[in-house]
Length: 60
Image (cartoon, rainbow, N blue to C red; front, top):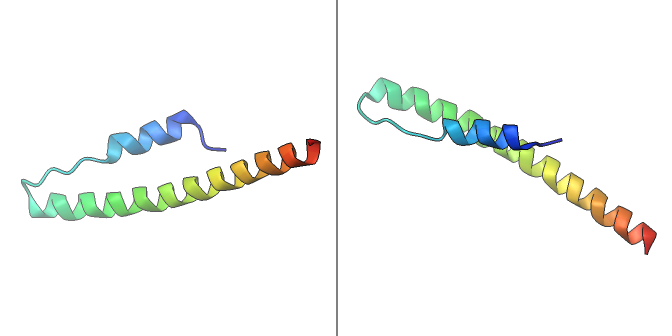
């Protein structure tokens, strides 16, 4: 399950410092990892929402 800490952790990683090309490469790699994590979070949230909708539909 996704929680607020997951989202806050990702938000703190989204920052680029462009002074050093080596640093930019490393940061882009980090952002790619963050993007992958966001895709996973999106999938988890979609599944949770679908479960909630199904649960609601089953009740009514």
